[in-house]
Amino acid sequence: MRLLCVLLPHFPLNCEILRRRDMNHRRAAVIRPNDGTAGSRVVLDFSPELKGLQTGMPLQQVLSLHADIALLDADFLYYRAVFDEMLDALGNKSPLVEGTELGTAYIGLDGLHGIYPDDKDLVISVKEAVPDSFATRLGIAGNKFLAYLAAVYSSPGGYRIVSGDVVDFLKDLSCDVLPVSLKSKEKLHEFGFHTLGQIADLAPGPLQAQFGPEGKLIWELASGQDDTPLCQRLMEETIEESTTLASVTVSVDALMVTVENLLLHIFAGSRLKGRGIRSLDLWTKTWDSAHWKKSIRFKEPAMDVRGTVSRIRQFLENFPQPGPVEQIGIRLTGLSYGVGRQRSIFAEVRAQDSLVEDIKELELRLTSHLVFKIKEVEPWSRIPERRYALTPASGG
Image (cartoon, rainbow, N blue to C red; front, side, top):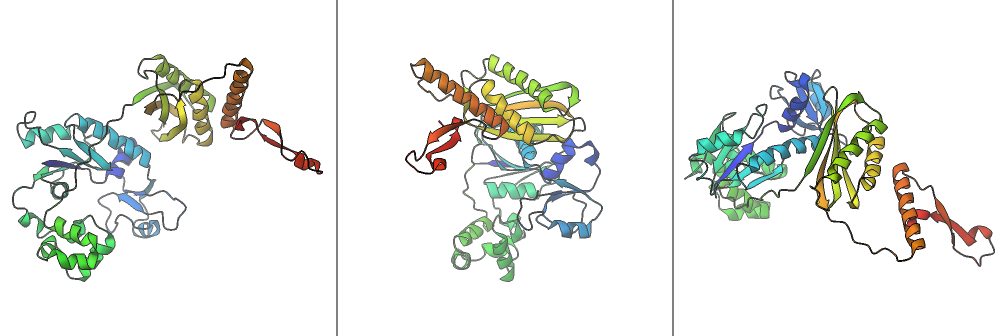
């Protein structure tokens, strides 16, 4: 199988430039957000002209080298959304597309010769799927590792083809290009193996003795062998609705009116086909192009507007907007049919079930239990406080 690797260097930084008008000519570093663990504030990406920086460097060390740069907190949800749009576009070029790692995609080329007479036509078509602000590097080879290396060592905006005897291409490349642990790379250098050619000249046995199962992988990759299959991206049906507000606002009530109108339009249409919402992405864009996005999951499919808006309101209230909102949108990413339940034939039981559902919705919105019922616990106890207890009415 021939594969094409689409490599997008400095992908997080270019995503930030794409949405921030003032970032195009500024030196900046994208920092991994603090997750509460020691040393979590490290560099994820940075402007190419910043010397001395490398991915994984602690924030304090970054500031000691470049105190005047702009620091941007990484927004992985936004990066994934941008990359998914590119993968959707690449999916129109070939049905075999893999994009598990941000900024790196693989395309299966077998069977495309009838559409693209030569590789140059294919490259032109693929580059049309990627915004011009991303410096795309392309590589074509017979397996994923070789295609990746071909992309890495291609010219910016260009492509490289690796075929036939790959020994000359690999022999002088640093062993740091191997997709193995940092500890294994350091160990290779300690043993005096600095290039792939030096590793390929070894027998696989000694490497396995020193590195275990990873030793076999190191030798195979250094020899140009890679049997990793292409994991085809599964296309998920999505439904999207968005609108621009008549005037910017930070009011949750005003945003909820717009959200409800979007949902009414979705449920009134035929695209759901009787299905409910399992998950959705809610996003907003402020007047100064700041993005806000939250993924919302439902325990059971929401089959109507009423079952959806209360959950969305909870997120809008608990996660404030970064500024006055100008645009708002909904992207449904999980669609499924509702769970069947047989209702009671007795009107009183149906009324009680309906009341419990209303209480659950109210408590979900207010994030606390408000309605309780008295339940017998130890009616025989001589201590009055032990005879009965208050339990949430929504507990059944």
